[in-house]
Length: 224
Image (tube, one colour):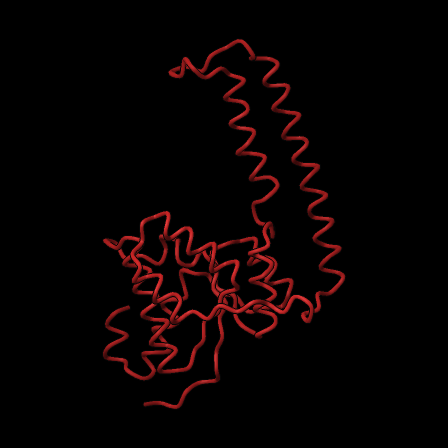
């Protein structure tokens, strides 16, 4: 066995487990999660690579997996090999510049959201009595409202830190000096601002395989 590398820690986001990017061509969600958790367990045993989640992320992921009828095997492996740890909210310091940047960004997004709303109101006024082709039950106003919801959500939330779960992820990573693993661009943007290491979720399984291949190349490089 090769010497263990410098101890690595990673904080995992929900999106890592749910993204289709970690699945093989014929692999469903459950099989992909089991494969990922097997890699995490091997990396822990062989190289002492530790993976963490804040409780908020763990609860969010568990709910999403249960809603998709994932087996208890996945949840058991998740509880066994991914450490649940609360971030030290009162100990980790955040630079004031980052808070100011967040306030400015959200203010700008609210203004953009208002412009989206104004455009939708004008469009609804112009077409209030019309019905949508192929949808007799849906008026043009209903269609405008539906489009407004989608566009407003994208304008205000896409690429921004928009939940307590996201914030917990970053705070825990900063506390542990750990890498962030996510497919969420908003988290990646803020990981850069926090000066944190980060990795796209799709690249995490290959990374673990490379660590494991240093110890057993015949087994792990054949799987990649």
